[in-house]
Each structure stands twice: as structure tokens, then as C-alpha cells.
Length: 279
Picture 1 (tube, one colour):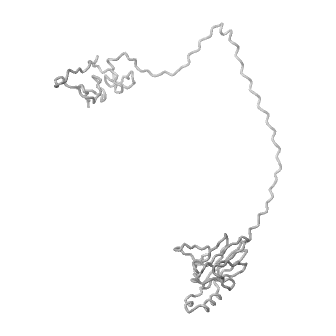
Picture 2 (picture 1 turned 30 degrees about the horizontal axis):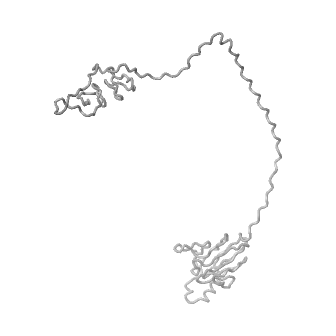
Picture 3 (picture 1 turned 90 degrees about the vertical axis):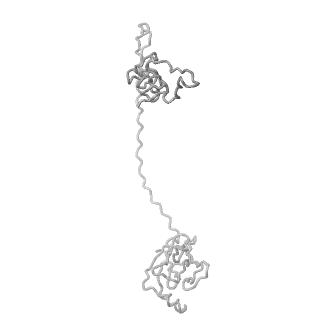
């Protein structure tokens, strides 16, 4: 499709007119017969209508020629032949060195020979190997007392019978478990809670007596074993529903009671904890 310039020329180029060089898309030139318009000259006619050889590089920007005017810079190939074409830069070369006159060559000092390389430094003598001294094993510090305590949980039938005898008629609904495996919990840290886990109340005791079998007489947080600085343990009942016994005697609520190796703690309807040291 041919483009039309403001002067009415058809141009193969879409940016500058191939005939007059005007910018395609500029405001059209008013007609001579138009009211109020003076005579308008369309500009000098090109020196030659011959578009020249297609593909000829523009001497200004190097763009390949497609018509009378360069599509990139608008150069007129017919009216400005005196602009020298662009040439590619030649790589720089080192000019040949002209021979010196005989008198100059005679007065030049003789070339200095290169210095001899310095001898390599003498290798340092290797140190004699030293005898290997085997490190003697250092004695490990003894474990602090109280770190090897445990609580052994079992079902005590004698304690259950005593609870049934002292309780009312409703205690008969709680039966002694047919099978209750022995469970051993290692005591560590400074506080070990004993009770039954409760997700709704956020209680997750370290010694969980939820079961099976479950002793319904054990409170959610029934008692707390407390580690003392001297390595021993004590027990405190924070306020359980059915109380806590140490060696058959009920301890006061909130009072800290020291424990010894072999002490038995009873809680709930039939649960017994035996405090042991060394296992």
C-alpha cells in the first residue's frame, strides 16, 4: 500500500515522502484556489526523479536506501551528493618504525642485557617430628544427686479396700482394675506434675494417669513433685478432690513434704506411686 504525503505525492516510504521529502502525516498544504489562502509553493523539484539504487547506504546514518530520501534521517540522495558516505572505522595499526640514520644508530647506547634470575631461597630445614603425647582421659564429674530418681505407678489392692471401707455406698461403683501394668516415670527438672490430662483445661501432666485403666479418683492436677537444690524431691498437694497420702498419712493441702527412697504415695481410688532412687 502506497502512502500519500501532504503535497499529494505517493511514496513507498511511510515516514518521509520519496518525491519531496516531506514528513508523512504533516498538515496538508492548502489549495491555491481556497479562499483566503495565498499561493503556496510545493518546494523545489528534485534534481532527479531517479530513486537510485535500492539498498545504497545513507552517507549520514548508514540506513539502506529505499527511495529518494533516507527513512531514518531524511537525507536526499539526489540533491546532496557532496556529503561523503560513511565508512567503517578501520582498526588502528601500529605505524612501521622508520629506520634510524646511521649517525643516530652509532650514538645509541648498547642494549642492556636482561638481569640474571635470582637464585631460589634455600629451603628451610624440616622440623623434627615431636613425639605424640596421648591425652589422658579426664575424670567426668559425678552426676548431681537426685537426677536418678523415678516414680513407679501401680494399682494397690489393699489401699483400694481401705478406701471402700471408709467411703460411702457410692464407692462400690468404682471397681478395682483387673489388669494394671506397672509404669515407671523418670523424675527430671525442677517440677513434675501428676494427674490426668485435660485438653479443655490445658493440663498435660508429666506423669499422666489417664490410663487405661483410669482411676476416677485422681484429679486433673492432683499433686506436684518438686526437685530441691540438694538433689532430693518433695511433694505438695495443690488442692486435689480426694487428698494425697504419704506412707499412709494424709498430707496437708499446699504443704511441701520431703520424700525419701522407698516412700509410697497413695491417691485416687487405688493408685500408688513408689519413689525410688537409682533406677
